[in-house]
Length: 337
Length: 166
Image (cartoon, rainbow over all chains, first blue to last red; front, side, top):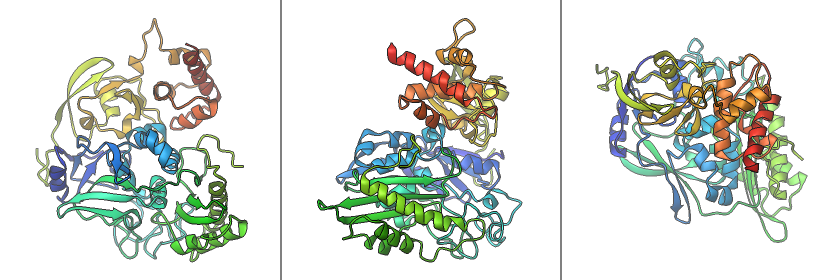
């Protein structure tokens, strides 16, 4: 691994100040960043170590919960109040990575993980995300895992994570501190589509540091699921994943529905118009199928990943049934009934 | 020496407690915990498999929690307590998980074994696994290319059931 400078930040202000320098990166859990440095995809001049900053607490906030940016994925998933009030988030985090990585990876870092597109990871290949203007090796190449929605002619990478998919369904908000002060970003606006600038994964500006993720005061603990379809049953990235939360009225009619897709687009994918189709409906194959079709409107395969369109349709319908029945998929028992 | 951005990339003084003994060390920023253990401290029980966090062969306990040491910078862990396979038991008295791996023949070539054992010790301390399925899921970060998985889960299950009957 190439060497780099190192600064251990003493407070948020020092981190933000140091983070504005060119070619520096914040170091939290490091589980993705150090891997990228080993591959020379990232070549930072210096790492700003933020691990000693007081951003690790999980606490009550405006009726909901505030997750410190440095709380680990494991601390978050197993936190009693999150398991009880936001079981979708617990289940989703536990569907990702391995126990070792979840012990190190942080909530803030999880949002910032980069795509696992093979061309992005291989500095010998063209990649507009890694080296703007160099082209896209995945178009017409090995693209089985890549995007069917939201891609551009320059980049078909997917956002690889699980946690952000649940956070999209839960309508979490990301708190950041930066040179211009603090602000809050809706999760839906945090990641961005590649367009003609695929090197930018998100809407953070230089020096901005994630300090917390806020979960709103809402109860989706009865009708939820995170269904993750992947090539092996554990420790693999999603080919397609679906986070669903439903609110059912006493008569069983759907009062509210949110569906977020992972593994299919450059960001967690939500389509409010598709969710609106379910409101006022009774759970049914027809209603769920119509919502799935609307969610996948405009989906385009790139060859190897054509299968994802039908796979996503079926996964959405199945996840909606699981959520409606209150039988979320267990990340331990892989049998789907 | 300061690099172009004014941040120092010189070796940093750190203190680590490794298998119970405090060590004062100087490490370059880029030095991983894995390379420090193997190359500087010659604790070669911790294995380098993929060096990319995908195989779990380098699993150690950091402040009691299992982590992959290949994706951990030594300098960022200043003050931490590290337990490696060398620190789990003694020749005369093996750690219960080490003994179980012997009793259940939970390895073939043995390369992944130190990581498997450290990971299993972490798993047992976490307390989230109660069944074989849960052990399998929560050990998925440790690959065994010989395919000794069935015996590995037997070994861990045996320690788990001993713990539960105590």
